[in-house]
Picture 1: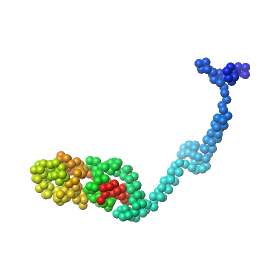
Picture 2: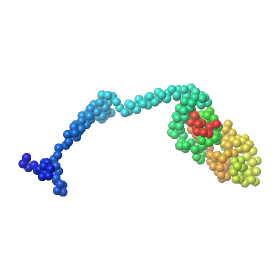
Picture 3: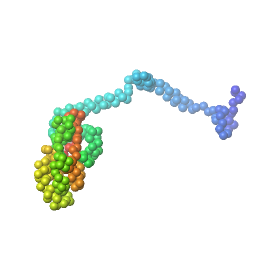
Length: 290
């Protein structure tokens, strides 16, 4: 076999016998440093499987002699974070929601927790920036159907609005003046023009004058004589430029004829009192809280 070895004329190195397009492969040995690195990696890999979780089994991997795992590290970090939060959570639980603002650290903690909770449970309806949308109130402005104090917001969050499963839920049912034939179509059209006038929008003056009489008889005891609203009964302000279902004449006619009654879940049983307090602090701090 030694007689059959082929030596490259240029380099003087034995060839492997492989040839591609006239190019022959030299049988150079691997560098020593590469071999030692390769052997070290093998040793390291074997040691790793002994000290750390590695070999899969039927019910799980081998634990390793060190007993370490990334899952265990995560569980430890979560436990430490919960322990750090527990101090503030306990304090928040023992503090009335109206008194939270007196403790800046507690406000900071509650706001952070409330912001996180809002992203999970509230932004689907109220928007990622709490800007609301058709049928969903904007939480950044100062128009509050049920009041914008932190106590009002807390109560609304705890018990919801028109949420039948909670006996203490907020309820404000507007009569369906058209659907239930409480008013004639012409009267509804006129009162809608008057509502437009209350909010300073363009309107039919003659129709608004006729609508003023109807408004006084049918609407004023809830929405107020000047349309300023009444948070005690959940009646919206009709004199501003904020409209939950649209402020065009046709929108108002539709709402008076067959009102849309939005429903908000009660979060008290679902999230717990302390988390609801955090949400209340966050929403109140958005800028429109009273």
